[in-house]
Length: 285
Image 1: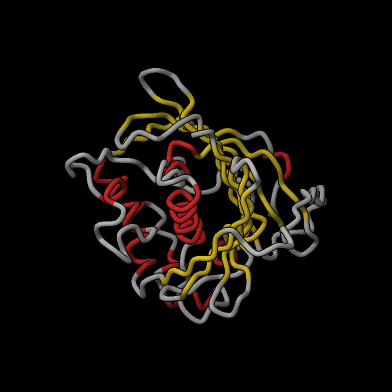
Image 2 (image 1 turned 135 degrees about the vertical axis):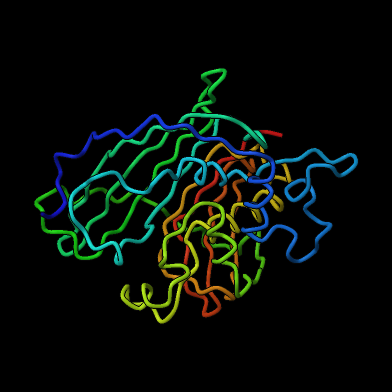
């Protein structure tokens, strides 16, 4: 069977989500914190440094709501399923450790002809208080899964500034970056198994798109939010090209005059966009 549009509205959960400070520290390392200077990001990488309160990189919210992947939406080739877009909306800073529940709903299935994009939304709710911690909207690109007669979907306008970026930073991922990042929860063999990656059309295992997203989030927090992770209200972006572990990334960002909104994109070594149509909203200082 092809994708089944009648599955729109299908809900999975709630399921329990628990994490410790070790999990949030591991996530920080998995997206490059401390890689350039081990003493520069102690708020993300340690929980017991004198005078430094632990913070959580905001994109960890997506990891916490990851669950078991896509709900049952019909048949598709899992070797051709890749992360297409990701948005997250945060109600405040994430706790370094906690207990929550997560619920995922299938919101849209876009028929792109030969291919498809399936959208899900996940809400992460604090177990004790019932407070919403984060809402994640995820788009999965499913190669060859189109042609089921669904809507084609919308194209949200996004225009890049014509001026020089306010932020131009280069960072290099590590050769074993995907092996480290998969320990945060995403064990998709596309990022570790050469045979599986070849079946998906890649020369070798690729880096998780969410690792690139996390690298970008960390840099934007450090450089444009003055290291205050709690200022991030939302972040969104579209994955446009694969990144290989060990590749260098360049992050360009343009801030509005108020500094409340940031447009960004992340490029590979050839100057091609790998994370595009980026937008981050910041709370006032």
